[in-house]
Length: 248
Ligand code: NAP
Image (cartoon, rainbow, N blue to C red; front, side):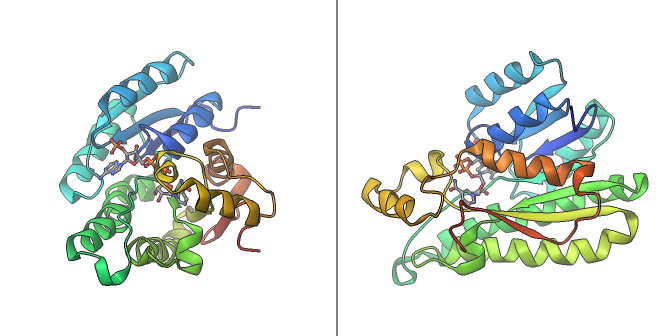
């Protein structure tokens, strides 16, 4: 059964990793995909081609999620080219890890801008469309680190915890218009973001996860599918940990 037939979806940061996984699973379910990247043009164009070959409409947009103006322009372009927006997935994110003692001010600001301010930019940009149609689903990619904190990631954890507060507030503000807003808190997912980590540390994490493995982008995509589709029509303001039991 195709759960998103004909739905128009925006995914930020889908040129690789979790975003790519979401785009692939959503296209299998019949969704048209508008997705962004900031610098990885070649993989973004390859993904656009791959999705189009599945028989859906797909387009890659170069757009910095941290920029308010670029986000407004992006949404205007998507509306013109796709004719509507049913689902927004705020997925773009970066890390700039360091202990507080060594963390530069610009590394704090950059992570907050790209991970958290972007969610404000994009949600504000789509809200008018979703209000008018009295329907919409917004999904924010937080992290288990935003729920429990992590030494060496104060900037990242703060951005991801901020996303949870934002999610719950928007769920309260827009619920009466049938616009739902939920967050996903992935645990350890094997992508380029986590490939930079020390393999010994990673192996230690894997052993500590009740399901004894890191997650795949598809594991997160399937949770997004639930929040994007009518299967979750009565679910809003929630944070779903998709972490192999890590936080249990
Ligand atoms: P990734 O492999 O590093 O991919 C990040 C994506 O975001 C790329 O497509 C990148 O595009 C895009 N991006 C970065 N800065 C951007 C900007 N300013 N504007 C637009 N797009 C931008 O990361 P991932 O592992 O797939 O993670 C995706 C999301 O899940 C992130 O929010 C991350 O914090 C969250 N998450 C990941 C894990 C994990 O274990 N992997 C765990 C918890 C949460 P370019 O290549 O063009 O820059």
